[in-house]
Image (cartoon, rainbow over the protein chains, first blue to last red):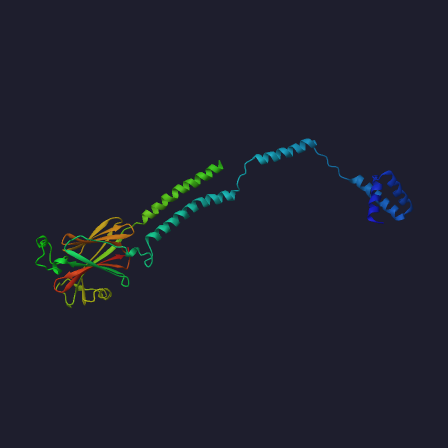
Length: 180
Length: 154
């Protein structure tokens, strides 16, 4: 017996077949013992199910039950979504930390600007000089090997011992030595 | 509401961060401790001035490189002072020789050499620990004076 025939047999037991088809299956059950046995078994099973199928009854009307579900959905959609407590705590922690990090970064940057690498920028070579006395000349000497910057003060009054110097009367206030 | 609160916090931070940063940058400007030495250089082994003492070997060795014409170096005065941030201080090394040093932005210093009460020379340059800034000139009787300015640890 194939599956198709078995399904038709079940439909015949349930009374779902058209009259012509039902007559053919009834004839089969009467002549075929296997079909008759299956039909008997299906009838017995149907009888058990019909007697013991649980019946669930709603305590309220169907319309009222579904309207309650609909109202609950609408209420949930209308409520603002509160962020999770740990996200809020993390944000409260990160806002001041990020501010402090920014300040620390700018501080380090400013220190880096002010304390420049001695080998690098060339700013150490920028020197402004001004001779404030007309009695002296200067010569400068920068020794990077010795890390030394030397300004040599030359006393013009001693070097240029020129008797024809027209400004000699103006130099009376200048000592022989500029410093000592 | 939450959105407004969130952005107001961010704006507060944006205003606060530059102010704190500028404070930090300003706070970086600091006083410097400097040492000024007056040294007398000569080829005579003994100085005519009793208060002169030979400089230490390291200083003599370093001085002999730019000043090979002198054999002996004698320490006359040693002044250590602090120059306040964006301020100045006077280093009186002898009756005739004074330095006026000002701390400038950069950090740079303005070193003014004053001889016999009159300004002689002014130099503005960066100063670093370990570096020497030197003024020098010839003196009477085949000798020379040397003024060394160095930055010390605070």
